[in-house]
Image: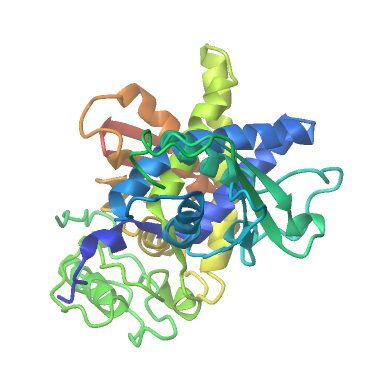
Length: 181
Length: 240
C-alpha cells in the first residue's frame, strides 16, 4: 500500500473551498445580523483576534522559526512562513516608514475572495477580509507585541491591490522578547 | 482502523450502484449482487481512486489523501483540490459557534435558533461545495447512489476521510456514521463535553442538507453523538 512518507502533514489539510465558502457564509450572516458596516468589520476583527490567539500556538509548534531580532524579521516570517502555511500564498512586504515600525503586506492573490465578485450593494465600506487583520493582531499580541492592523487598500473596493498595514505600537524590548512570530 | 461496513443495504439486491461512470474503467454492474461481490467492488473502486494502492485495501479504510487531484471522483481529478490548513477551519468553525451563541440569551428557543443559524450557514456552504465537486461527474442513478457519493467522494474531499458506515431502511432514512469526525477529534475523546457536541455538528448537518438539495433531494439532517469523536448523521429524505 503506497502510503506517503509523512502522513501527518497531509492529514492536517482540509479542503480550501470549504474554508473560503464557510468564511463567505459567515460574512453573509453577519451582514444580515448587523446593519452597519463598522459593526461587521469590528465583529470580524474580534473573531479574528480570538482565532489568532490560538493559531499562533499552532504556528509556533509546527514551524521551526528562529528568534527574531527586529520587526522586519517578524513581518518577513508572517509573510513567508505563516501565510504560506495557512493560506498557501506569500504576500510581499514593504516598509512604510523609516522608523521601521510600519509595514505593509501586499497580497496579489487573496484566497478568501476567490468566490466574491463584488461587495453587496450598500456595503461599500465592508472590509471583507477583516478576519485576517484580527488574526495577525491576536497572534502578535500573544507574543507580547502590540500592533495595529488594518486594511490600507482592498481590491474589492476598487483599489489595485489588497494591502494590509501593520503598525507596531510598542518599542521592541529585547529583554521581554522570548518568542517570535 | 477499518470499520466493518453494514451490508444491510447492499445485501438486498439493489440495482447497481452506478459504477459505469466515465473514466473509472469499470463495466456497468448487473442488477443483483451478492454481498461479498459488493465488498470487492467498492474496495477496488477505492483502489483505483488512490491510483496504485493495493487491490486488497479493505473496505472502510480511508483512501490515503494525496496532494493534487484526488478524492471527489472523476470531476475533481480534473481540477486540483487546493488544500488549506485544518487548524484555520477548525478555529473559524469554533469561533462561529461561540459567536452565534454569545449573541443569544439562554433558553431552549434561543438554542434552537442558534442551531438553525449555524445549519443555514452550512446549507449555503454545502450547496456551493457540491456544485464545485460535481461539475464533471455523471448523473446519479438513484438516491442510494447519491448517498454513497456523499459518504465517499464528498466526505473525502471535505474531511479527507470517508464515512465509516452507511445504513438505510430503504424508505428514505439513511444513517451516516463517522467514527472519528474531524471537527470533534480535537475536542474530546469520550463523554466529556457531550452536551456541547450538537452545536459543533449543526454546521455539518447543514452541509449535508445543502449538498443534497443541490442534487435535487429535499431532506432533514440531524446528528447525534454518543461518544466523541464518533457521531451519526441521520438523513430523512422528504418525498415531494
